[in-house]
Length: 177
Image (cartoon, rainbow, N blue to C red):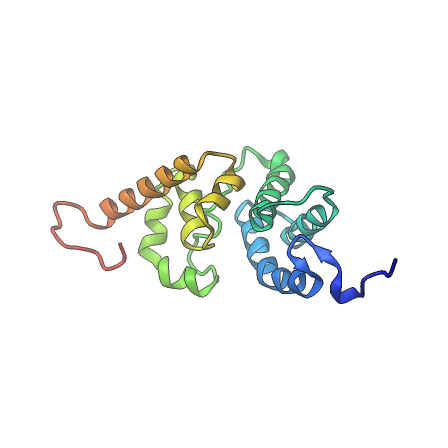
């Protein structure tokens, strides 16, 4: 039996080059996601998520969702001793935080302030959908909730933001919502 060349090894993303491309794209996003959960070592958590994925014996149907879910679990586990501190997406929504182009386009200062007022469950679902660009199915797997619940949370989060930015008494329409 001939061993496959290094470029032909199978990974959860297909070939080794496909894995390297997926790693290059997802690693920074996963580090950022771990930071939002207040992880002390977000880079280590993102790397550990890839290691866990690679060591799985069973095939993972949605590797991206698996990685996000693993990062979330690892970050929350790391934070467990600090659970009485109020750390969540507020960390990333602070003024001066630098993020992706999507972050800068979608979440200007006013929207960031309004997002802080959303419940953590709504805020997280909306963040994963709008900023991280994940599919409903992937968010469902990450949060371990039904897809219908994800859709409801996103819809309600958007409705609450729309109401906050466009109060009925103002009569105007905000350009961001």
